[in-house]
Amino acid sequence: MDADIKAQLAPTGVLRAGINMSNFLLVNSRDAAGGPQGVSPGMAAAIASRLGVPVRYVPYPRPGELADAVGRDEWDIGLIGAEPQRAERIAFTAAYAQIEATYLVPAGSPITAIDQVDRPGIRIAVTARSAYDLWLERNIRHATLTRTDSLDSACEVFMANGLEALAGLRPRLLSDVAKLPGARILAGEFTAVQQAIGTARGNTAAAAFLHEFVEEAKASGLVARLIAEHGVNGLSVGDAA
Image (tube, rainbow, N blue to C red; front, side, top):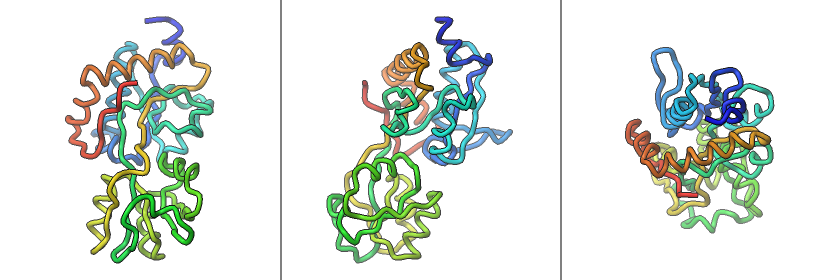
């Protein structure tokens, strides 16, 4: 192992892995001590094993808070959706996994396709600073984004205020639609959230190592095994870079 890689990824002798606790597809259980378990903690543990150091999970309630912490010496790697806004300060790998993002519309809605959502008068409920919210911020031109601080509150605002669309990850929307008689999830996706691993820009040796590790993890079946091991539906292995 190159000394520069270990110096950049484990300067304290431990790999500190920033984990987004709000993504229920990537963190879907806790261990006896309350630590995160799932696909993203599994990826972090595999990286630590390759480095020959212990892993320590650094939990964040939301992905935006994890991204904000870059440069504050709180984590060495961060496992969140790769978005251009975040990539200004974080060097991301290609996606190790990806998740479809689409819309849920209420009963009786005239909206039948994704390309009908971005129109004047349409209000979209969305979880603030999620990867798909960042995509919507860059791409929505006519509809209005109504942001909330959690997945649950986005659904609550959508229902309580009679909004025209709820944006979210398809697996979560499948549980939301069950609570709303007549509601529909639109076919297709407006984006696929690219779940990646990042390190602070400037860690060039570490970034190159992480890129190679992720490509190997996809090709070897490690990512697929973690998805199967944790029984995750709606998460697929990322494409080869």
